[in-house]
Length: 117
Image 1 (cartoon, helix red, strand yellow):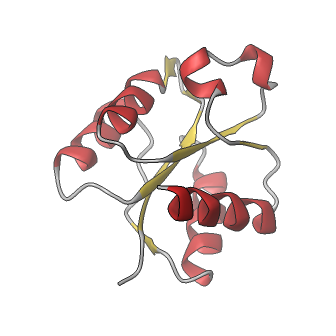
Image 2 (cartoon, rainbow, N blue to C red):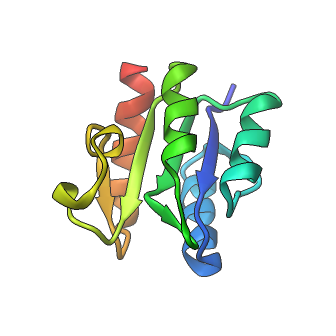
Image 3 (cartoon, rainbow, N blue to C red):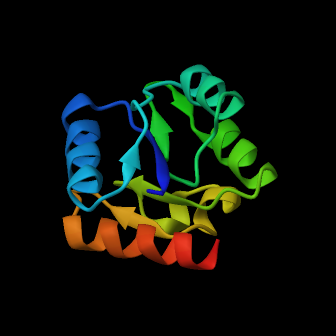
């Protein structure tokens, strides 16, 4: 069974790039979420095996999503244009993938999360 991946990203083209990259790598990608409420609702449903989480969604922190993922024991990677030192501790402890995204890095980090998770 393919690992189910939640993508939380508010920039449409970046979200599509992540989805296409992960889909091509053989992951089962859930419909991407662009807001905290959407992501939390997705977690309340069937959930996921891992997540790719943008650190900052339009005018809101993605911290509630990170906390919900951590509370469920779901590993996640953070995608951001910020440096690690600018992230809240709850996000800085996760693997960080910097924007612009590198497809190989994204697949490698996600594979590592699933292996450890």
